[in-house]
Image 1 (tube, one colour):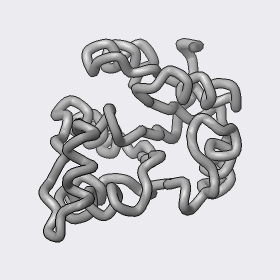
Image 2 (tube, rainbow, N blue to C red; image 1 turned 180 degrees about the horizontal axis):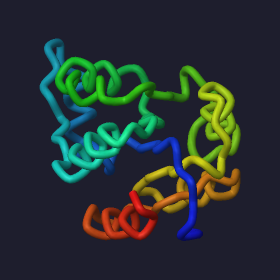
Image 3 (tube, rainbow, N blue to C red; image 1 turned 45 degrees about the vertical axis):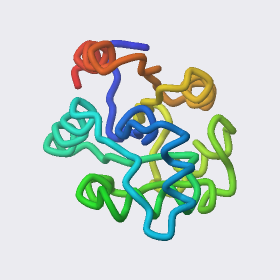
Image 4 (cartoon, rainbow, N blue to C red; image 1 turned 135 degrees about the horizontal axis):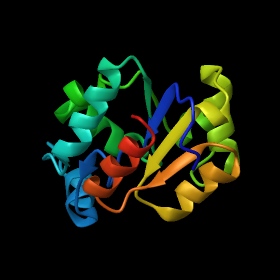
Length: 155
């Protein structure tokens, strides 16, 4: 990544970046008549979203979650979900990460150019997919590393 980038839009993955969960807990919750909350929030992820919003960046979420997990997130973590200007899912875009068409859909919908976007995902193939379309990307291994990379970018 270049150190002189002009970033206007930050695109966050949800699972593994903003929310933590165990797949088995999610599966169980989705089978319950009254589902429990299988998600917890990564404090550093939440703080980063809030900080970037305060600096007037456009903050978007992009996830491969389907309707069931999204319903749970909107039920149990509406306050967090409301921080995002938009949440793009495969049901809307008709594509999943790391398909280039998912990223292109976001760019077109939000009328932004790839070079002005930063995509943050814990899955390396998704970060590479975003990068292949021209988005700047951070492969989040942990929040300490991601925050360091954000600071290096002046964010």
